[in-house]
Length: 103
Image 1 (cartoon, one colour):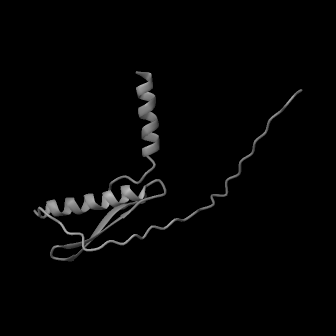
Image 2 (cartoon, rainbow, N blue to C red):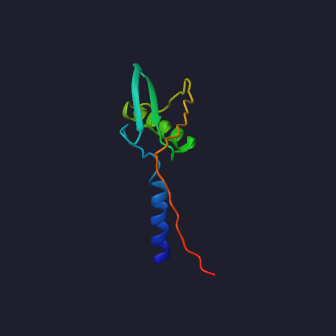
Image 3 (tube, rainbow, N blue to C red):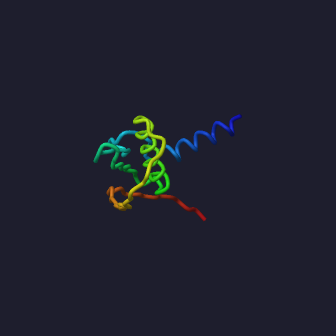
């Protein structure tokens, strides 16, 4: 029982860092723009812990939700852009290690 609780806790820590499926906010998320009566542009912004596959699947999920809300049974992907960017930020943190040895 303890192992299951520890395992679930570790999984939630690992997967909790990725961008959740939500409307766009400070942690990322999806947004869409209506281009025509039945044409939408859908974007999902992930973070450094979000995989390409996860972002792609979230974008498709949002497209399906919009289609379902409008009563459609099919959708067509007219095109897609991979706007993947990687940014490295130096947080200016320092690490110090001290120790003693006797021999």
